[in-house]
Length: 214
Ligand code: 3NM
Image 1 (spheres, rainbow, N blue to C red):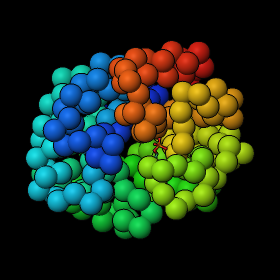
Image 2 (cartoon, rainbow, N blue to C red):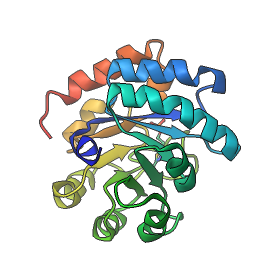
Image 3 (cartoon, helix red, strand yellow):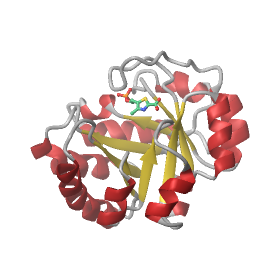
């Protein structure tokens, strides 16, 4: 699965802030049929047992689509359900501590919010990073946008070695700007989940990213 994260361009997130629990599978299918390369389950403020149940249901869809399924925040749930990866934030401890729970083969990603944090995550040995938020976003309230000026430097340093997924406020209507700034891989949450045609929105993003090689 680690080679799949290397090749990935579009990272989709099933964010329970936007998707009702009963719609999770349906929306997951739409994201997958549109062609996301990675799918994460992000469920802030929801009971762990519920997250685990949802993860158990989403995992087979990702396996069938042959893409990595990543659990946000909970290494133990990722390990228990047999997910392909886990994603952690800056305050969620070290990679070594996560590896003690999930072992060596699982994909482990880290959120980073500055070039320094991106370098630190690379040195620590994470398999990929998120870099953002590029723009302020209601999906992650209270964080200023870090702008586009560091995208190319981070891409050129870190991105030679591990994939850098730009995130935060990216939408179909600013994607061109984001790509022009150097981004080659993106995470898009609300713009995909709130689209009238979720699969079509993913396809649109893919078509645009495919104009640029990694
Ligand atoms: N993490 P949207 S920004 C989940 O910067 C998340 O680490 C971020 O959602 C980070 O595409 C973010 O709706 C929210 O802006 C991304």
